[in-house]
Image (cartoon, rainbow, N blue to C red):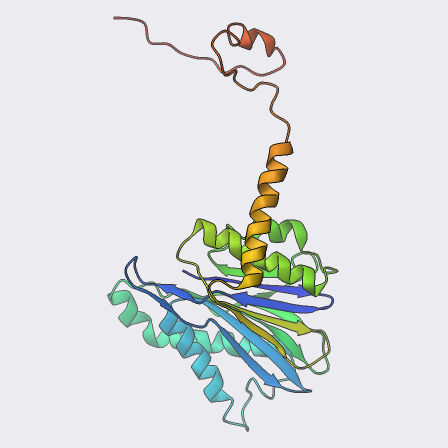
Length: 271
């Protein structure tokens, strides 16, 4: 399983991906799911991938091979990130069309998704989600992030924290919490985590880091977040209709909860 997330902020872009590929409980390997394409001063592009590994690798390889033909449209000469997303979607379709009959015959899932984002000189940073069919959507101010893979566990913290005005350090911290929540709930997502941070209008990608198992910063974030959650949870008020802990205290419990809707109980008469 995979977890990848990317954020589009006023101050820049943040990308993160895990490196675990699970082909069964006894066959777990690590593969990078982040690729970057940088021409300093002209363009900085990052691609995250999830889904069928052979499909995603072949689509990226096709995109790279296109870049060797300078007389054709490719990732190095198109004028916009929209064009990059279009090229990537086309590569994905091409690989899908070639491999689909053989993979489906073996009952193999061929779904694959990409997040692609970055900045090309002359336009602002942009972020796209490319679906398995090759079509795509773009991040907006109302939805300034995309996730692919095992998204459900790490989404709540991003929903609550991330806004376009969120600063990059806060965004990275939020992404770390998102990954911690995901890895605690799904063991098929795991370290190392690849992290990239792009600063708006820099047109370079110098902030790349890989967080290995036991990384001090991630470990500290995980521990502090767990402690904080437990601390806040302990301060939450108990429900007024809480079930009593002793039979004596509960003798007239339901008579005291006059404002609560009671659930009818159907008892089976003795035979």
